[in-house]
Image (cartoon, rainbow, N blue to C red; front, side):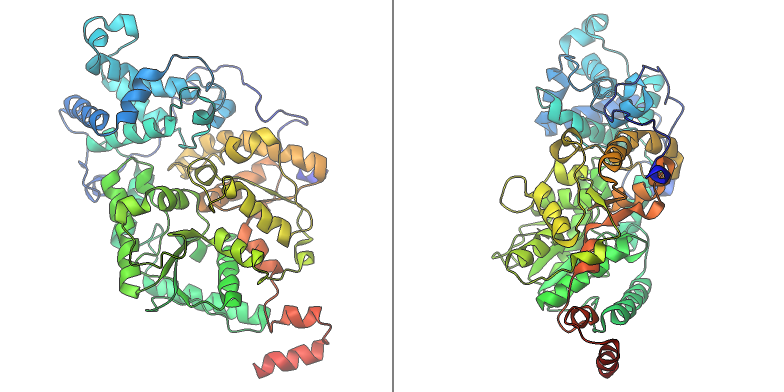
Length: 518
């Protein structure tokens, strides 16, 4: 096990409170959006001349539109319950990464312009003018929040720092101070249909390659349809599933499950992205524009059901907002969940006894599970409370002989963020991402020491991409992060497949003959 251990000392507490280091992350700034990234989303291309006036006007608009934001501004009593709950504070020691301190960057401006005392006695309530220095702090620290909502779980007043971060980013976008990473990605979705800018021909080429790999592996013709009208199911999945490991192995797992279920399904080249980065910048208009692509694709292809692949915030938007943004979805079959997560779909088949697994196929893995924040704390699966926690674990236990949970105070509703969510999965923030991931990595190293865990599974594309970068820094291999449906893909025994024939004791020659004949 020694070769798995990384730079964190043995027995390090994942939730250990660091020594304060004021200004530790003040110099780390995300790349600003270029004018073309801004204007594509309906924002000014650069910081407007009267930015202070416009920002205050926008804040007033949001305070009127979202009553919760005003409640969050007024309710905080600085009790300290949230101070040590942020993984970025735990990883950096910068006090402005305490959720309460990050909130206060907006709260002091709110008090200055929207409260009687702040207008007349600003020094009494910590109110400050919205100066360029304050704006710079906003840009720095509101882009050091992954909007994971862990702090809100522990806040006695339910203050949601994620909502405050979203509002701050929307205000900054409205005055021309946007972030390149998120805004560029949203623009790609509008222009091409997905975050990665993959055109339909590239998608079809990738799917053809996957079909060939599945044929070689299983001996079966497992299709990955694209733009096929009249399918029962339209799968909307993160574009990473068409691009890189371990995401694409998850896609193979989806395809195998659909094949075994005998359902007619399709992907869409028009709505080829489940993710909705507009949520990260708090822009309802842009969120709606992305969501409407999914509705249009469902209408054009005349599908009856929507199933979402493994992506954390995509599922949050789908579960919590999709019907409001792009509904009502009365065009779909109401006898099924609208929408449905791929884990729910697979779990339902498991409960019906329609899936068979050979768990020994995953014996190379000693596995734990990372609850992705937007699934754990902002959505659910199945009508049963806690389904978002239990369904992925049930799938992993059904497909893997060696599964172990991390410490209870680091999983489920208390899960620690991967460190790359909320629009922070960009190389210019790599230092923050590494430090923000340290609590999760310490928790993983604990379960490695106790149970020899070697791999981590997740149902979020951002988490998977983040851990691919982070795991090697903490003593694990880059491929130590796995898709949940990668485990399904490895273990599922499909009717008539090579794997089924092997389990039935057929000899190699007979299997080879049967595969050649098919």
